[in-house]
Image (tube, rainbow, N blue to C red):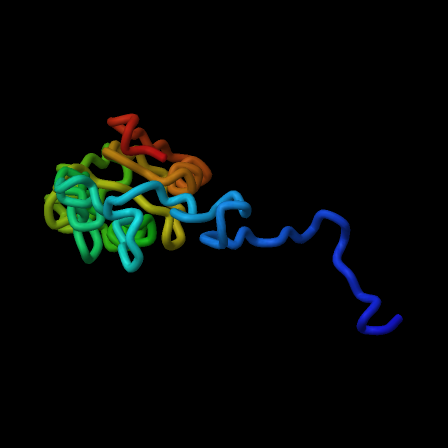
Length: 157
């Protein structure tokens, strides 16, 4: 095989339309741009123009975006709960609610609720009632012989 024998597959390439090359070409005179107007001129870029309305790219925030009404949860890891139970600051036999967590100082304030995550080792048999919990946290508590109830369905994943 020689270089001059190389060729693309049939129909793989198509010749580009050369506009403005005479009436017989099918794209002569105005080159398919119509007559007059901003779009018929050269050097015009109006891709984001919205007829005088503020364009979308200018209406959007420039650096990131924070949802103004998003829920902010106080986070508690199971390892920290276990630490407080071991230190006798939390009573494992009594029901542990969000108010109890605030009283003991594990959580500073409830915010939109308390969410339990599964970080750390957990072995205490407890009854927890919180706003939210990760799937792995629920599994870890149940594996230890306890129960974790999520008070609002939307907060649980």
